[in-house]
Image 1 (cartoon, rainbow, N blue to C red):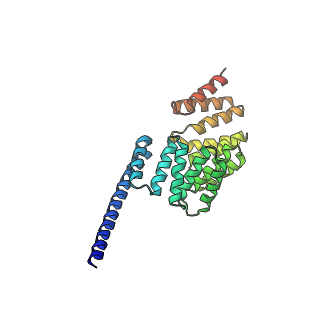
Image 2: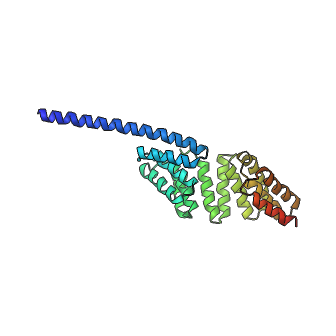
Image 3: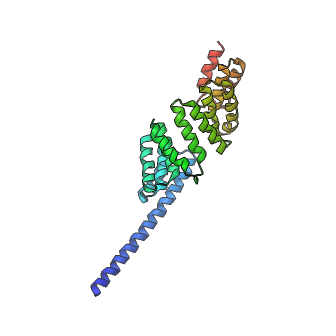
Length: 251
């Protein structure tokens, strides 16, 4: 009887010791995740990744940390690795809608359009999800990349209905109209996008607005827009393309 009691006490002590150790690791993981999140928000993705990896080491079954790792690998264009972490997050927490939305976005990047569509339908069926506009943007992008511009346009419009000042939704709504050769409408949409994108230093709507004017034959307006791209965003994605277009127009 004494032996049984002794064994029971020892097992209880080991169990409690294990629980304390686990809690300490989880607290350490949360600290590193918070540090990583701060670095991520400041676009320091390499240091953020280091923090998230330490967090994962301390708490490998934490779905939120897996989602953070997925997002960081996505930003570093390691899409297959990002997919593994988003899938792990969903394995740990099947109703983790934000991770599912992020997974769908990554599927789009690697051309897995059917998988993206399937997951986005699940996301949109979660009426408690507060990122509905992001899901509609992703669904729109899924169609846009498949050159299904009318369906893309409709989903970007739904995103705008959910978040009226969303730069990306307005830009790709305008770009969908541009691809459909409705240049007058694309100008209106892209000029609206400029209002929301300029403060984020995103030059895309400026550039496609300029292209829309060019396609309509409004040479001077297109020149003005291309020159604005170069002046406002000298290091932007579309600065060199704008210079190229100006050389073509001014010949």
